[in-house]
Image 1 (cartoon, rainbow, N blue to C red):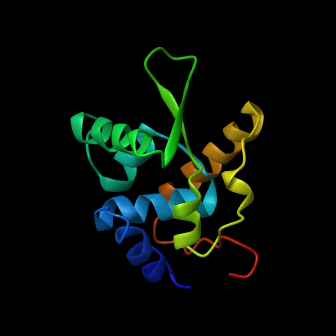
Image 2: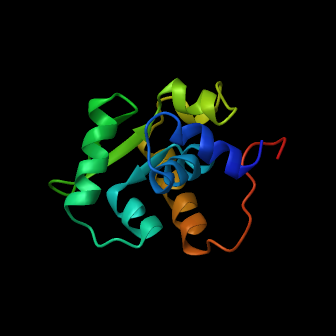
Length: 127
């Protein structure tokens, strides 16, 4: 399955192509994200659009929000099996709950992936 096919499959769940692209990136590489990651991915300034996107993810149970040490900040875990099934990874280890230390490592991986969008990053082993 190509990234374009994954994005199209997630977009069929009711997401815009931009939102679907972000969700595919997170689901393939880290499973967790911060709102600043979405702002970086889309080139948006952090604001109402970013807050609305994550509020929708939590409301529709595509993600869970875990409060961070910084007041008002949340760590979002994309754990809904529907998204992972749509990208061809229904049993991904990234869906499972993770300790804080592992979540921090995953956030650093996502930072690296988003820092250089021209690089082709491999996701699961079969890629």
